[in-house]
Image 1: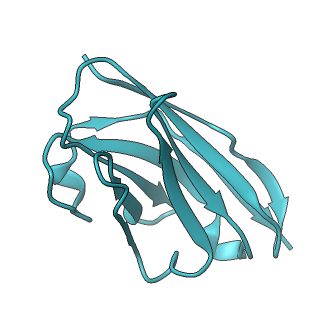
Image 2: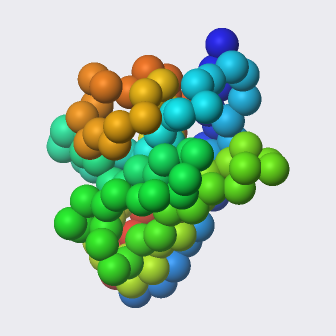
Length: 124
């Protein structure tokens, strides 16, 4: 069974930076995709960024491009989301997700495992 545990959320001022981490454990495909989604207050859960575990190829939502960086550490089985120039609208619960397939996706139903989420609050 795959387990994903997020950490690193918190309160940050607008314009600031924050780094989220997701520790993955358990059996998963070597061709997996790790991704970050977020769900703001009263909003649907939306895709933020994804990385192909085997190659490190990344894929970003428009809202994240240029401000967020997703990376992985194979030795530690972790995926990180570095966020900078944070905006009020980045306030959300951020979820780590794993897809047991080699193709990138921004679609929630195509991810097989989810973490419990970590809160990010951006203040003015």
